[in-house]
Image (cartoon, rainbow, N blue to C red):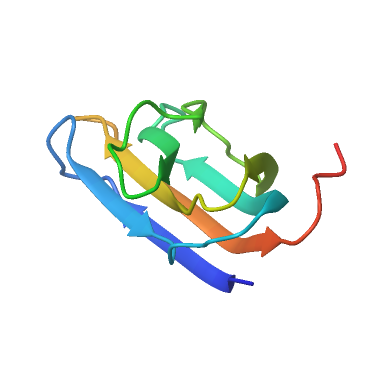
Length: 123
């Protein structure tokens, strides 16, 4: 399964609503999986630099609405998140991470240690 992917977005000096995407490889699995990752939204002034969204694109269709998001400022360390994904054959899916900046709020939006695990989430 996928392991070791990361993304860091410097939101400083960006216009509000600018986006960066990280596309995971398309997976074709017939089971419930857990996607876990670490994320951080940080800034020196304590204001959130933007939003981190996660989308699940099924069978190459539309991106749709986020299945998860975070927009609070995390000032110390990383926060772990888990997402349960269930698909049934012959469906395929793709996980898309999206960072969206907020104008006038310098800082970083980061994700790390993205893993797709071949078992249900523990939480």
